[in-house]
Length: 264
Image 1 (cartoon, rainbow, N blue to C red):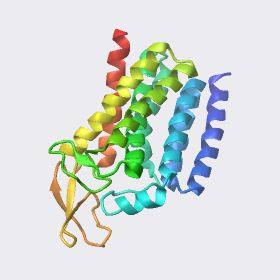
Image 2 (cartoon, one colour):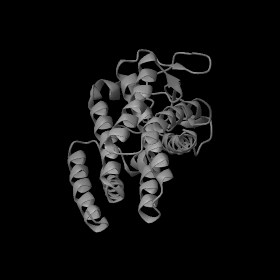
Image 3 (cartoon, rainbow, N blue to C red):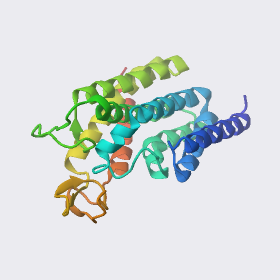
């Protein structure tokens, strides 16, 4: 199949999936457009790229819809954005992968696959950890001090979320291996996925912006709390929101996958 045929096929497939996801409230309007671009680039790079992207998208979507109402109720006072993912959320999780797919089209080379799938594995591991941990993880705790915090707090961990993190990375690495990537890609992306998700947790606990609601006397990531009060910046770097942390963790996943893949 030629590059043009793959591109057009990818555009049609990605647009169809994005429209369905939009109607299912998994994506916002801008999120659907961003997902269409990423899906088109992945398919243009090759069907194996498309397969791993679909594995990430469908597994993450299913987990986000699992116990969705209680999860949103538990996290609405903390989390800035809900499950209806916008363009920034989509690009934060899939942007590095899409750039690597574009690189593989323009200058075909094995490292593009290592970096791209490693970045996507980090997004998978982090998403699985968040969704499963919020659904069944019990009381999350900070990684420094082991203090109980509200569900949805960045930088917090739970036993279920940690197990899901490793499982998510292993899942995408397995899919990559069976999809036709070199066997080194499958192993390296597991390392990249776990490393990227751990980086996400560390950044969330240290440098990510934290805010405070003066009315509820409660920590949050929302600029306007669910009570309607404008919150104040309290900790971390104000520009480093959850989307920026997710993007950084994907970059970390790509770098670690590259390093591990080069030595195996």
